[in-house]
Length: 480
Picture 1 (tube, one colour):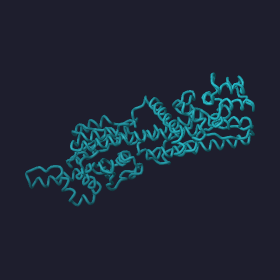
Picture 2 (picture 1 turned 180 degrees about the vertical axis):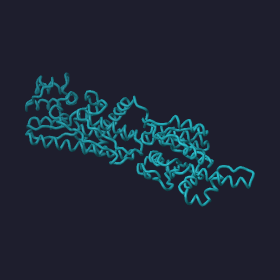
Picture 3 (picture 1 turned 90 degrees about the horizontal axis):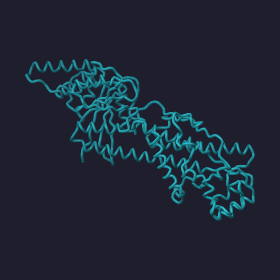
Picture 4 (picture 1 turned 90 degrees about the vertical axis):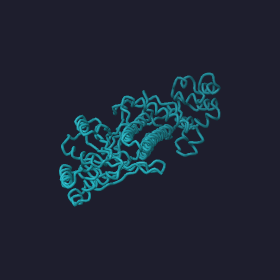
C-alpha cells in the first residue's frame, strides 16, 4: 500500500492556515480560528481519505513568530561550525542542529514545532495573507523554511474581491526563486480551487502525481453527487408543497386558522430542507440567518380550474368528459368562470368517469357543500424555489472557514432580492402543476415515491432546476 502524502501547512501567524484546512477537509469545526495571533499552539493533522485509504495528511502548524532572530541564531550556529571545518553546511543539517539545541526547547519552541514537521513532510504550503504588506520578516521566514529541503508552494489567501498586495508578494517570491504560486481564498474558494491547488502540488511532487490526481477525481465526484442530491431535496420540497391541500369551512375564523396551519406546514417543510442542505454540505444550523418565508394569502378554489387541472379532468373539446362537463358546467366554466352548483358538479363527475371522481370528486363536492380548499400560491412556490436555489449556490461557493453567517433573504414581493425570481412570471414547471392534483404526494414515504408519478415528477423538476440554476449563475465565476 502506498504511503500517504504528508503536507505541512506553514506561515506567519494569523494568515489562515487553520482556515485552509477547514476548507480542504470540509470541516468547519477543525482547529480554532481567531483574530488573535498564535491561536494554533500545537501541530494538528487532518486526513483526506478515498475509499477508506488515507491519501493526504495535512499538518496544521503554529505560526512563525520570530523569524528575524531565529535566522540570526541559525547563522551564528553555522558560523561557529564553519570556523572548525572547511565545508559549508547544507540547510537540513543546519535545521537539525538547531532542533537539538536549547533555544529550540525554550525561546523558539513554536518555530521548532514547525521545522520538525517540515522535515517529516513531502512538501509544504506557505500560507500568505495577501492583504498584508511584504516585510523583511516574511523573507526571513521563507529563507528558514527553504533550509528544510522540501518543496514549498506559496498560497495566496484572502484574494477574493478584496484589495491585496498580490503583485508585491509575487515579485518577492520570484526573487527567492518561488515561481509556482497558487491563489486559494479559504473563505470563498473558486469552484476549481482545490483542483488547481492539488495540480500545482503534483507539479512539485512528480512521484505523487497519481495520488493527487486520484484525490482530485474523488473530490469532483463528491461535488457532483452533493449537487444532484441537493437538487433532489429542493425538488421534493417543491413537489410536496405544491401538493398540499387543506379543506376548511367558509367562515372567516376557519379561513384564518386554515391559512395559519398551511403557512406553518410549509415553513416546517422549508426548515427541514434547509437543515438537510446544510448537513449535506457539512455546515451547521448556526451558519445561516434565515428570515421566515412570507406566506401570504393561500390559494383556493381556482386551483380546480387551472387549465392543466381541467385537462387532466378531461374537460376539453372533443372528449366524452368534455361533453359531460359542458352539460353540467355550462359555458362559464369553459372560459374560467367560478360558478358551480350541484348539477354542474354531477355533470363533471359523470363526464369524467371514475378517474375524475377519484382525483377531483372531493374538490368538486367541497364546492357543493360550501367548503374552501386552501393551497399554496404560485408566487410562494416561486419564492420557495428561489430561496432554496440561491441557498444551494451560496453553500457551493462557501468555504468552511467562513465566519459570517449566510443570509437567506426574505422574498416578500419577489423583488426583495437582487435577482429575479426563478420562475419567470410565476409560470410553474409542468411537474409542479401536476402535483397540484396529487394530494397523496404530500406523504413523504418510500411507498408513495416508488408507486406513483411522484418520483418522476421530482426527477423532472430536479433537471429543470439544474438548467435554471446554470442559467441564473452563468455570469459568475465557476466557484463550486
